Length: 165
Image (tube, rainbow, N blue to C red):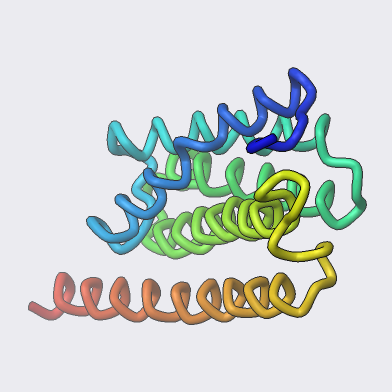
């Protein structure tokens, strides 16, 4: 068997959130952040919400449920801050941090699932506590922290240029 067995909700969760992965990579490469006001940013939000909401139904482990809840919270904050605080100049910072965190919550379980479930019958890692999985999770956390610092630094420089020319 090439693929692991999944329930109907599991397939919905997987296929519903899968497009968010290439969209994340494209948007981050193109814009340096996830811009929720663009057409692709809105599509990303839809796929992310599908994955996060269905994840609560599918995921059985407490850490997995926590990540789904963190994802939902990050998505809500990141997608609504622009509407709620339109005139607040720092809303972009909160939006960027929230949507970057949501991206982290997409990649963290994706890598874990790939390593612990594929190929079916003989996965690469024995479980979520396997050294390879933990190393990748730590690397993703470091990328999140470094990425947010980089994004905010770039935004600060752009804001200074806009203000001071």
